[in-house]
Length: 283
Image (cartoon, rainbow, N blue to C red; front, side):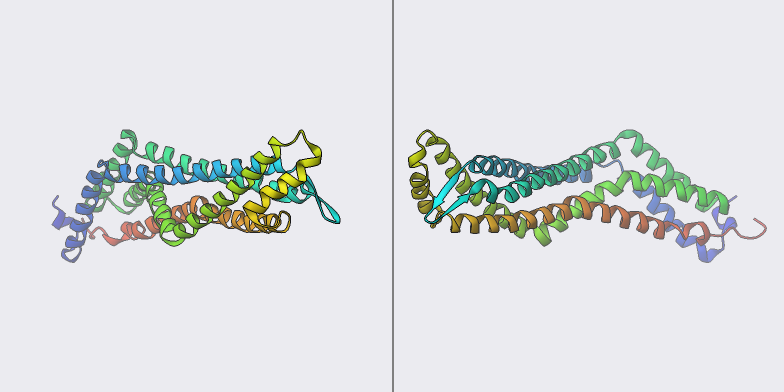
């Protein structure tokens, strides 16, 4: 039975376009260009996340060394161990956030590699063929099952890939400059704290000269040894919170949001297929 006898003439052009689109999509799914682009993009994002994770650990190490310093500031004692406790706890949490962000990017990379496996490609191509055949010869119930199979396989094949690309590109476009600025500021803080920590570790054996030598070192690095160091800690705290938010948005919220949107969009685009090409009566 021919296609024209199965379907009203007004429906034939739409059906042909839908079938052609499905066949092209089945072929496109075997191309590796999008797969390579997605992996390259994720590799760049992983490099940035690894750098921030290493920065968090370096900050944590420097602050931990500085916590052992007790400084005599004129008429009062400043226990830096107490002053640095909140900052050290925050940096420790920041390192966990960066670990989670890195793990999220690595998981996306693994899922993209799984979605590009030959088995997934073959199943997706088969679902495209089944849906195309059901549009031409199938009845409503078969079209609905074919549509659901296509929806599932399209999500498995492309959703993670699209979500990873979209979240990374949008993150770079919207918050990329902010992320780099925050990283640079925190790296400068790390350099100052590490310099002070190394000085403190090198003069530990002379208790009487610890404060004076640290004071001289801090004055050359940050100005007033107490006030300016605590000011820098406050600035570091703000930058750590801001950078944590940036990575949570880019590596967790954006991917989940785009996955949800991809599922809803696929459902919206394919839902009318079951009733768009009804079988003519008496066919």
